[in-house]
Picture 1 (spheres, rainbow, N blue to C red):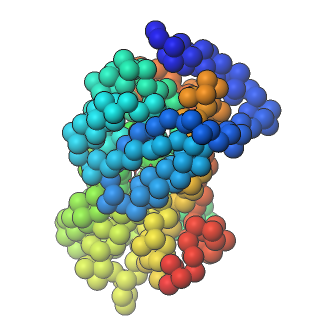
Picture 2 (cartoon, rainbow, N blue to C red; picture 1 turned 45 degrees about the horizontal axis):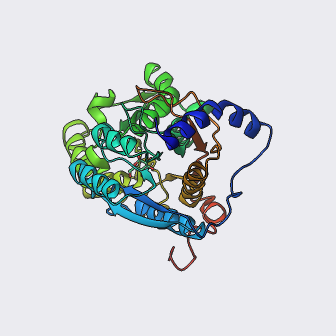
Length: 364
Ligand code: GAL
């Protein structure tokens, strides 16, 4: 098929070579030169309701501009149909490449066929787009590790490995069922938590332990708050919650509201250990205030930089750097990926880890 597809096919063939090279310490990151010609890159982000995606959009735009590209940034405001029509419009406007963080990972097949027909390469950003071969590269974090870091924190804080048998009560929350990352976060966490559930050192009083019982549509905080309130009413009349596995800061804030309304965080009812993800400002402040316990920091500026380098490489006929060619199969193919490492953050290390992410004034 036309030129760019042929180039992409050749590049995909070279992906394993690139992987070998990167394993040997070669680094194509940051090697791209500014181009006055550039082109236009369409960036479709999921929502402005969460601070992280605003940072993502801004960072990708800045990086691409610095490389000489024009950008068109759109936000689908968590509505899959809106996102599809936004991407359709970007294709009609003749963008040269697309960087997409999907709202519903299965809703983009038709529109990505249109992109393929127009020879527009597609980079799946943070969330893997499923069920289509028309996604060329994936950039994200080690999503399973995110879940592991959350579970590890709970295990350490409850002292489960130090002979504290409990039993401790834990409730489980997961992300949006239409986001491919959700099962990676959840499975990563459960890989560490399951042995303690089996030994009954951890007990889920609500009985809700299956992924399809604990998801939170569109990662919505108020939805999580409602579920937590229901659980507290039903299952914790005479018990107290010791830990909550939360996959994302917006959900953690919702859960904290439910807990505080139920009297947690005062007197004899301390707040449980509660995890999170994204190091959003409200959650970092909550950690400093001793409410949320932990979050998982993912440097979005770095994610944006890798995505921008990938787009630049693709448009210049170079092979983007990848470090994983197996882990992320989208049902149509294994999508070559570059995965970054997440970091666990709590009250003890936030100053060091988030030093150049937030200013001291922002954290006040
Ligand atoms: C996921 C992402 C998380 C979090 C969540 C809600 O796809 O990997 O970091 O941002 O969406 O926005």
